[in-house]
Amino acid sequence: MTDEHAVRILEEKIRTMQMEAESLRKELNYYKSEMEKLLSPPLIEAIVLDILEDGRVVVKSTSGPNLVVNVSGTVDFSSIKVGRYVALNQRGSAVVEVLRDRDDPLVRSMEVVERPNVRYQDIGGLDQQIQEVREVVELPLKKPELFKELGITPPKGILLYGPPGTGKTMLAKAVATESNASFIHVVASEFAQKFVGEGARVVRDVFELARKKAPSIVFIDEIDAIGAKRVDLGTSGEREVQRTLMQLLAEIDGFQPLDNVKIIAATNRIDILDPALLRPGRFDRLIEIPLPNIEGRKQILRIYLQKMKVDNSVNVDELAMMTEGFSGADLRNLCTEAGYIAIRNDSNVISMTHFKSAIERLRSKKLSKEVVDRGEKYV
Ligand SMILES: Nc1ncnc2c1ncn2[C@@H]1O[C@H](COP(=O)(O)OP(=O)(O)OP(=O)(O)O)[C@@H](O)[C@H]1O
Image (cartoon, rainbow, N blue to C red):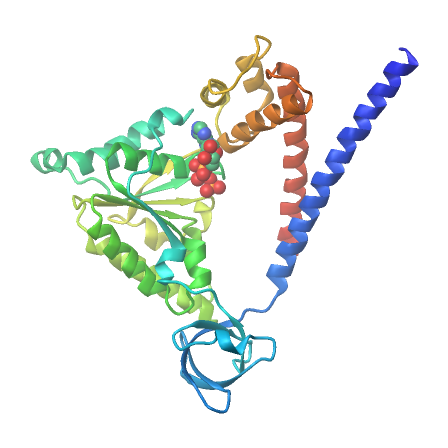
């Protein structure tokens, strides 16, 4: 090897390590800010009812009585208006923050898409699951008379379970698209956290909206956040979550199997779900969405590769073999990463070498994330 060549290789190594250091620094910042979030004490949300002449304000906290409180010096007093949401400190004795204006709590907790645009053909490796969802959700929405005639009762709700990033949300969206149904996306962990004291009301509102927009599909992601088995109902937070779950069960029980609202829930943690959720007439059809096997990985890779400019060296079979354990989301990231590596190398076409470097990068990222996740369990 010539000296010049060796220098070039070392320079390239330095560049790669610098990029690696930069991305690790970003990751570190992310985890630091996550830790801060987890350690910061919760504030109490309240709404301003009146502003007194002496500078104090009357507020109503979402779950408690009306309070007369001071306003912290750090808050811009002119921004306090009757009807505004504010945050009280932990003791509930002072306004410490004026919250962003919002129309309705519901707006923050869910995304309503009249017609999503995900199609079954955009999903790789889940043919059997797609088939099942078509039979138990799409067909009853489109042709309820068929079921009436035959006297069959389709499930009211289905539960998709499996590891993160395997296409559960995609599948729920695709079934809404193909059934011409509105798609109402709620993230259960959000309304458990954001709507202290209001969870049950929000659930009611979600289903009211679903009826209004019918035919519709209510997709409840991370259902374990409200539907986990609870051993101890000691804290008020736990009781609140329990109330939210009860309301959800009541809403599901209030539907008929052939009504034009269907509920799809998703979880990564089926092992911790409250059996009440899985009783007949509720989420009684469980569909596993596993990590893709080699065939699945090939299908997913083909979906993404067809949109990319790749050269002849790119071999899908080989890539699928090299990506054991990758989810659909990982495979999509892999394609994007390979693209970035090509750009960095001034290449106008993506080659197998770019993919191989991308696999290495993603593997080491996945590994470090697993270490962090394992660490969290022991905190
Ligand atoms: N089977 C798949 N086929 C094609 N793309 C996929 C597949 N699975 C995941 N993806 C890609 O990964 C992204 C994330 O997937 P999705 O949100 O559907 O996963 P999920 O199972 O709902 O994950 P989570 O449990 O983290 O919510 C999708 O938008 C899509 O780009």
